[in-house]
Length: 347
Image (tube, rainbow, N blue to C red; front, side):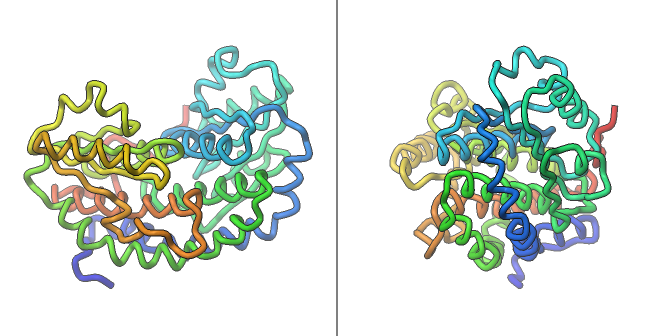
């Protein structure tokens, strides 16, 4: 294990959950393979749209998953916080048969359960749930309920749960797109994840312990915007730092006014639009801020054998999580127990 990576009694659970992600992904892929026929059968229900939902981290997961699913399948796909589906259904749904994909680490968040209950009561379509605990209410509500117990966590801030559940939605999109080749290539991720965790340790420690930085901005577009939003949330939760996410080119439209010498901008770059995204990072550098290409920092910027971009993007997550963890320790905080937060929100 790289000695540059810090561990601390305050962050022992977060540390273990970040570093165990490759094993969790491997176990989740076994579950997904066991449910292969059921996952494929959802596409035979002839829905007109897919809506992904969750709360907090899993809402950001929903944003990433909706963008990826629409890109890969062509099926209209959107994301909403569960509270919006529950309280404002007329603003959220259109009059089409819907596949609602509900994602929750705990499976017992009040808004999530109420969104599902109202969806089913109004007979809007088919419900598929993804969660980590098979004894919780959500895991019994759907036409199909996929439980990935390897994502279970003790920490309040999601790390292992988020990446494991996101991996589940990547698998869904691959299957619904008829891309069995992509589904099969998911098996390459655990080993790639171990490599990334080891290689990113030094840069994570350097960024996290840089006292000159007082604000972080995470940039990502397409499916990577939802992942950038999640990593920004991790920085806020764990380290109580100023942190915001933006789409890459949107950063020029106002947010770059905040760039100073104490700014760190972290980019989740694509392959197809790397030139445009690199130009934004160069703008930041020209203004005196620091800019980090996360894929390059963790040495997965070049093509990994057998890993399509849609599959590779999950590797951004442990890198950003490590940076947030290191920042928390640097500030003398406990990343396991963020201020003012609970593991499950119950109303």
